[in-house]
Image 1: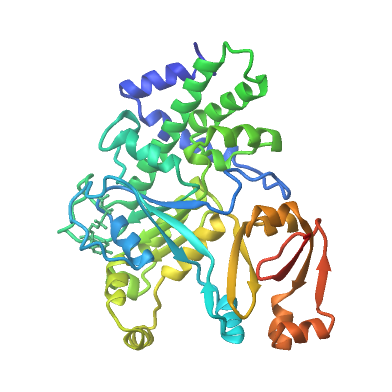
Image 2: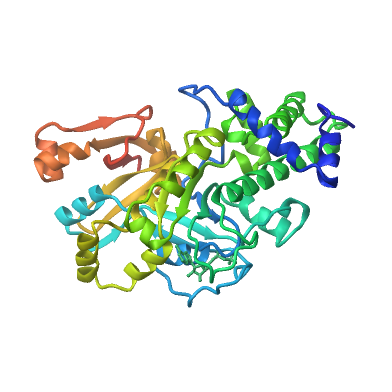
Length: 410
Ligand SMILES: Nc1ncnc2c1ncn2[C@@H]1O[C@H](COP(=O)(O)OP(=O)(O)OP(=O)(O)O)[C@@H](O)[C@H]1O
């Protein structure tokens, strides 16, 4: 069967014509989404979303994972495919509001917002056809909700590159192409299996064909194409790799990073602007982060002030959290100050349900204090006395940094 001629394209590509997808990258601009303000979000809804570190082998992924998660699993091996199974950990999301709230409330227990991070095996050219760790790698990416795409810009000759030379743009293209091809393969197989079944809605098949057009004919990530709310519903059931939000991380040479050299970073930024517009690009030097990791807090402060730089890790964690469209609100008592992660635009009953399903079922109202008012008045009691704590019902959309007491039916 031939959907938009794509089976022929796929066969050609498998034989020799990989540039088919690369050629089609030039069409991406024409296919990009026009922003629509109240669009349904691509991806799983939920509070427990994960972000995976993705990239070519031996470019610093495991070291970055260790730095982000403050773990030392031993010095990562300096050879490709040292990571086979994905490992995961939760890291606190830096938030000065949370620190301030804790300082003022001085609770017995503090629980910050957290982000789940996965380290995955390296991806190589032709992974979608089984090269390297191929399909195993790609299915690891399927389990995460967003991607930190790490790209190597450091020259270090002692660290082998599977493509033999250091070329960030080539690496970006390889990875994007592998993800596009895997998505094409997924929807082609869906169309092949499901096309004869009357149980599959016609709209699902239509969406699958549009995905093929987007990823194969236009070389565009699914996340960058234009979709209606109804289409997003079907796309979410496909769980496509290029539908996931991406944060690009450029791993630079230490000196280049310290001297704030723009060269490699600008190249990556221009590529992202063209082929994945709107996604964040952050520079870092993992080897520099490794050195900071070994310092005491006082040494760290001195070193950063001398060099006029700071660790990029907090910005990276925040960028991952935002890419997942997550936010948090606070509950604050003398015993515990806790940040609760919910998707952006969550209404009060669902936000209460993040604490316990019963809180959603028995939801009555929320007593909401804006963080700015807390800062101005100093305590929750003072906010209440000044009429700044407002009671809101089930239609209230929770705002980042709200301090909330939920009223629950007994
Ligand atoms: N900015 C940098 N400058 C120089 N060397 C670096 C830099 N970043 C990472 N490295 C080195 O690259 C090597 C590979 O790192 P790491 O094992 O973390 O890569 P990886 O991407 O996880 O590899 P794999 O996918 O094979 O598991 C390590 O020796 C690390 O110290």
